[in-house]
Amino acid sequence: QVQPVESGGGLVQAGGSLRLSCAAFGRTFRVGWFRQAPGKEREFVGLITWSGGNTYYADSAKGRFAISRDNAKKTVDLQMNSLKPEDTAVYYCAIATVAGGDYDYWGQGTQVTVSS
Image 1: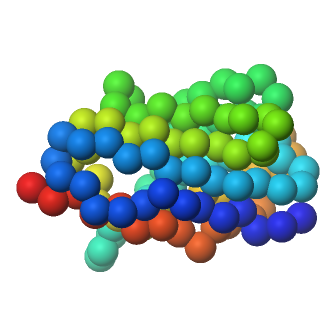
Image 2: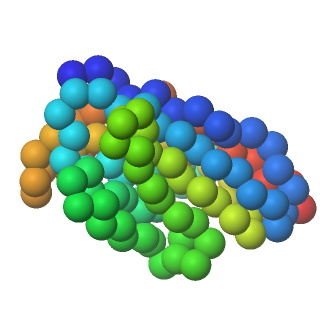
């Protein structure tokens, strides 16, 4: 198993969009996206199951964020639209290798900064 790698972070104005990508390797049951803002605890953003492609989102992400996967490339993308300054955080992807299990592998994170 290899640690996932995130990419695509950056600086964007409020109302703009960013697309993050997570390259995942090895056994993958589901991939989750999390974020952590300065001085705050890490929070769940959303997830996708690898085989069925089912997605689930935190309330803060519903309607604005979308998670998709590319089986061939073994990547999972987080499309973020209508970004707000409160979306500013380090975004992490994480891999769970078994159903019902915790996330076993975490990426190093990518910074997303939304200016007002």
